[in-house]
Image (cartoon, rainbow, N blue to C red; front, side):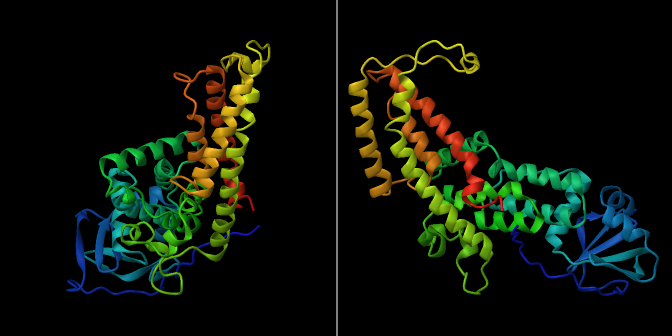
Length: 372
């Protein structure tokens, strides 16, 4: 079983002595409680908080505070043997911004936003630290929030895409930054062991061409900033295993587009020729489908639709050509039941497309080799 993790530097293990009024350190404006019992230092920021609050939520902090002093050093932090304003000092090897967001979530409850890049910067920091310090309840809430934008169900994906399409209409210049780079999401999922984020994130990035990913134009720089410098520069990129998964998944997705187009020529028509009454169990949950009375004409219509769809998506590579879920949805709407001469085949096409999309969604983890 191959597992890919994003490397992170181990924390520095040092004991620290803080002078009474260190000029280079600043107290956090909102997280400095006069009755606090411990001081956390992250970078140059000090947080005066309560041991009881941290110990109640985190077994890591609880064990750290229970260790004998002085001095105490762990793989997560260094507990100094001197105090500052009467409180012991713990140096955290994390960014001040992430620590502030974590503490605010612990004290006030998590207040997540709309999953845009700014919100992702906050939530990802909370997820990283709640994973590191074993704050399970907060970790689960962060993952659940991220799953709104990177869902585990087809219904959730459709809601996400509806939001994207609405943004394209109302804010065409901003819709590209509606969500963060899927590269950042994939790397976060690896770092924090949150595999539920991976299928949607890999599927999302697979819909773009390699040129868009690796040689983005100005309006794509913010979305794919993570993979621009994949030659050892300062930019973030996917690990080798996930790059392989992306390539294999893109190939499988392209095959799925061709397969669903050609499947349209036989699947819906065969379904529309079934009887109108059934004693099978599924008849209780699915409405009966009317019988096609003009099979010859409808067969020719479907054959023509296959040709047109092949030209549009496979040859001309128009919008959505690398998005089989989108293609299947569009194919299902080609024969509207309201205006079609054969309502049986129009309805059958809609039913067929819905089932194809459900089947595809279940296949995504296999396309990207997430089962291995």
